Every structure is written in structure tokens, then in C-alpha cells.
Length: 240
Image 1 (cartoon, one colour):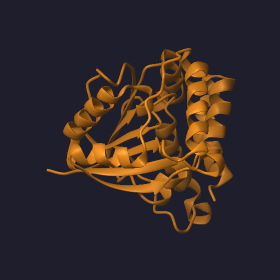
Image 2 (image 1 turned 120 degrees about the horizontal axis):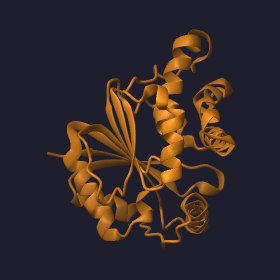
Image 3 (image 1 turned 90 degrees about the vertical axis):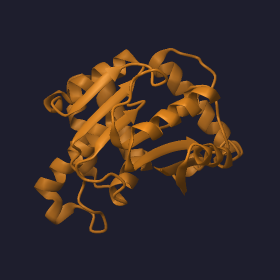
């Protein structure tokens, strides 16, 4: 169970970015299991250089900043006992194509601009800095198959030898759950950016095969709830 006070602490900076940004952050952090999972399982190490692909309005950065501050102030009595202490990243570099989301991220996280940076660019061509952790949550289905492979090759090149890619995708072979995911993601694409590009989906087996071909060692975990049971978290580590 994620403490409500933690969600409130992480979403509070978005009040400065407007009501939509604040309400979206609150709802996403409360209902999307990805954010709790990365903390509960210690998937991001301390002092990591994080590259966030499709960073949107900067929710990953806000979550990590808020978690550290809340743990520092309240962790002794309220932090979930089974969770490790939250990480303190060395840097976070977010890339997103939607100017409004990048603007919201910059407003909400402006107090941390010395180590958290958001750029408005296309992940198909944007330069990737060296990273210890690359996060790509619900983003690669917005580009075509060739671009997916190209992005993942560049991720491999940017990762430290002991780094990790946290890639959330929808399993296209998961029946109606997968079809619902596609409908939701298509709607989100229109609402956030006005774009109506078609989505490029793969089955879990196809994602695993692609990552294997690109010299990643991969484990897969279920990463959805309710109607979104098609979601998978692929934890991929570069091989030599």
C-alpha cells in the first residue's frame, strides 16, 4: 500500500504548473503501479544518472524527489517496512516531444534544476547522455518498429556496463486487455499532444526477442492492474 501522504508530497509541486498538471500527477501516482514498484523493489540505485525517455510532465523525477524528502522527514514512522530507502539520483535527464508537458515539468521541478533537466525533443533523434538507468514507460509504441530498434540500440550504447533499462510495454498478445491498452494510449496521445499517429505494438515474446537480439539480458514482470493486465515491465541489462 502506497502511503497517501507520499503521493501528496510528490504531486504537490505541480500546483505551480496548474490544476490539470496537479490532478494528473495525483491520479497517475496513485493508480499506476509502476511508481510504487520501482521503490518497493529498489530498481533504481543511489547516485544513478537517469535518462527518462518520454518523460511527460516529469512524474518520475517528482516521485523520486518527493519520496526522498518524505522518507527523510517521516520515514522512521510511516515508510513501508518492506521497502528499501528511496534512491537519491545524481542526475535526471528527461526527453519528451510535447512542449506543454515539458513546460509543466520545468515549473514543477524548477527547485532541482541543477540536477534535473527536461528537454523538448524527439527520442528518435535526441542525443542520449551516459546513464546508469534508462526508463521508457509506455512510450515506444508511439514510434515505428525501425525506430524502436534504433532507440534501444542507442540505449544500450548509453548505459553503463552495470546499468539497467526499465521498459514498460503492453503485451499485444494479451487479448482484450491489450486492445483496451491501445485505446487508452491512443486517447492519451490525442489529449496530451493532439497527435493521431498509429501505435506500433509487439507481443511480450517479440519484445523479449528484440531485446535479446540487441544484447540485453531481460526479465519480465506483470505491471498492470485490473483492466490493464497486459502491461509488462521488462528489466533489461546490457550484455558486453
